[in-house]
Image 1 (cartoon, one colour):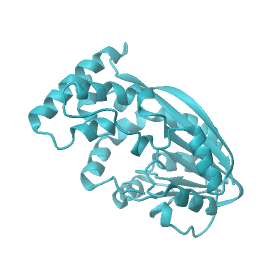
Image 2 (tube, one colour):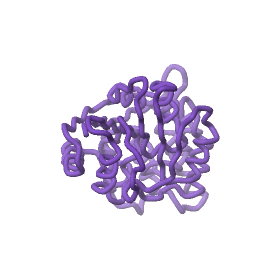
Image 3 (tube, helix red, strand yellow):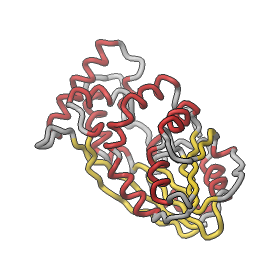
Image 4 (cartoon, helix red, strand yellow):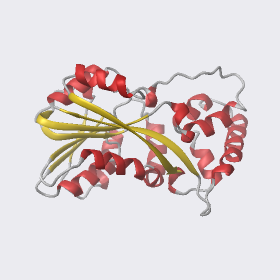
Length: 270
């Protein structure tokens, strides 16, 4: 799993974690509906970050279950451990080279599997980590162009940054954007009956921040971060202003910025 979470990015994520969790609540809802966790089950949360979905899984399976969160970033795991009052196991590891010490009934992931350096090896390791008859439920982004959450700020930024040559590649967070490709990957890694369902969700940016705060936040995440990284302060300020102007067309009656996001939820069996 590529270590895209350098200390600066981790710090930025932690500062915004509460708002981002509210933003991603609709994604968690469709993921957990597909996972259909039951009391007493053993659950592995992949790319768990600071652990919000891990803690949600622990609440569902109860004290008779067992929940483990795994992430490549030690800083993220430290934050997850600090925020947890339940008995949750936390592991720092690269899934692609990891040897599972035990098995789980269900593997879940909310946007934690798109950054694998070696997806076949990683999904094969997850298959080995899953009991026979167990299941997988993962949420991944569709193509970037299908989600206004990414396209609106990116196109505003590109209106300022004239040295970026589109199209930008569907890599990183968008690498698992095709259901057929995901199915082939999973079958090759030892999973069966993969099924992908597409969800078009309305996402409240950072859980309800102001237009200006939302605009600035896009400099830290997604493709807008990629094209604006390393720019001088004046250029970054111009990008933020352009994004803020574009976001004003997406403010609801409560003053929140709301943008659509297309999410794929894929399930499979072991």
